[in-house]
Length: 309
Ligand SMILES: NC(=O)c1ccc[n+]([C@@H]2O[C@H](COP(=O)([O-])OP(=O)(O)OC[C@H]3O[C@@H](n4cnc5c(N)ncnc54)[C@H](OP(=O)(O)O)[C@@H]3O)[C@@H](O)[C@H]2O)c1
Image 1: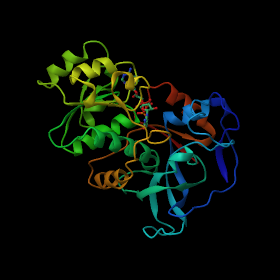
Image 2 (image 1 turned 90 degrees about the vertical axis):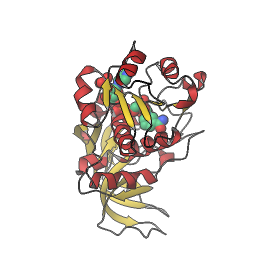
Image 3 (image 1 turned 90 degrees about the horizontal axis):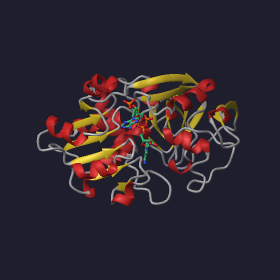
Image 4 (image 1 turned 180 degrees about the horizontal axis):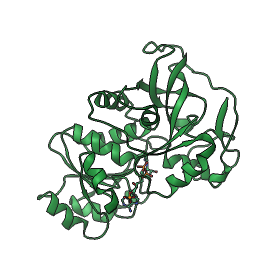
């Protein structure tokens, strides 16, 4: 099959489309003919060799952890789907890859909502798992007031909508050009950087009672002060968060939290009721994957980056 691969760690230019052995569905898994798959910041870290100690890989490696496609092979024990069904989901997190190819094996999936295009569904599942996991950790529910630092990216746009669906009020930080975009997703937008506490107080008198850090920009001390302690802050992006007593949540690797896989089907149902969408920042072909990785590395994509095989 055709697959995006790299044979050595390095910059985006190590990515190339070449022939790879077809993967097959193991017990409890399915294989899909991929219609679209996602690019996440973690794919760029894996490619650059930053996760080598944590997650040892065999090279060549096929990147990508989320995909949407048509089921064409079913592993032992799977009874919920049949060949020909349209699904979206994630690959085995332990492998941190396998999605950016003609065929991918999924370890968790849900029916593809008709309300989402292939591109939207292809890049959705990893962000849904992450957002669900951290909203659960923070206990976000009806009445919660939540600040999302770094709200305009893949995880932030997902977390806004899932939190609003739970009945939370959400303030999201982004650059000015993304404020209308955040408002369209249900968040109250504000700018990140100095003076955040004052802006949050002006927007939601009484402040917020939980904070999700998706930015990893060094603002953890300010975020902790906003909620008067580290317990009400969770970061997914700042390796220094634990130094401030803040939980750094991971979905894979040593010390990972349990992945919130049930969130994929729940978000799919919200999409069918027009309460969840996936803003797509850009769509690339597999051959253009280096440009897709470079856009991710710019850290200013608005929403999700998607590859089409
Ligand atoms: N631990 C986990 O389980 C896990 C899972 C998924 C992702 N992550 C990590 O979480 C982070 C977010 O992932 P993602 O997929 O959402 O990334 P992403 O899509 O690349 O995020 C891009 C967004 O970040 C915003 N941004 C850039 N600098 C910022 C700053 N200083 N303050 C606030 N926002 C800023 C940008 O908004 P503007 O253009 O408006 O600045 C842009 O829209 C990454 O570091 C990723 O590695 C961790």
